[in-house]
Image (cartoon, rainbow over all chains, first blue to last red):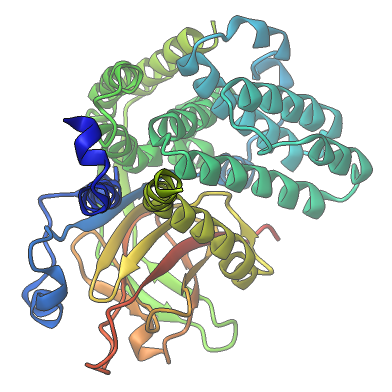
Length: 305
Length: 145
């Protein structure tokens, strides 16, 4: 029967078309609850007839590079002792642990690079390369990347550009290979490492005007993005586990209050840079902050163990 | 020989979506990323194949003190892509439709907040042409000082 069908080119073509349509519609970033508006449907009625149109939704987390930049701007100091030792590499043998620690090492290398710690940058890039290779993300970080870092030890721009390129390669290869669940775990690992570095560097939460504390509190905004991003791949058991962990973190963040004022758009015709002017009023007591710090440490220890 | 034709047709259809993704990746890397200069690309990859009339939304938190460049670009096969930046209440803060369909926008936020970026591929005015699809990429640049 099957053989008979396979001999008919029309059936074969129909089958191939069905797979094609199915592949195009199984985008993990689509939210089926959102439909194209009426105007769109009217304009495209002939083309969309019979095909369920859905809006694609992306949740973008701060990349390891952005996290490191935010840390530095907030007055963070460099402390290599809090980073994940590369000796731990051999412990990571599952897809989940490798993906989480690829994210963790990516943030560590970005943090090291922004503080001009070249040897540490190369060390963490080598660790990231190993994790990427073990995950089957081949060619995202090749030997030429390490070589470029070694040849440009005093050129931070080239180093940052190189790091940015490796992230783009990793993300796009995973997207291309339809391994977005792994991609989301890497991003969450990197995000959590940023939060771990930041919370580890805050010794006295009571001191006012601590920009680093402000940025830690700000992660309440990104936390929603983390949960939404993981939700898109919640069928994956590893993603589900991490989602549960992040929900525990959310319980603590729920005790942090942020009130947001209206946004005013201020244009600077000279610099051509627009400022979105607004103010956040934050309420967080030291006990909640310490609880948050402990939970972040607990999760980070779990992921790097 | 006939079997070979079947396999070829089947392979072609199976590979098409992946070829599209690969082209999108190259487009994002070779075209859109250049628009970010002198800002440094954050490393994230947000790109998809969109058809005329389709739109997509991206949610991202932007941090106080950091200056950003958003770059939105679409492949030549589709009409000029519109992009709108909104706050969480969906109040429009920027639209490139009022700025000569600029492909990038530089901004900073005084207070950390989540913004929504909507990209839309308009329908072509020419009713006689076929509806086109193409790659649309949203990329973020960071000012490093």
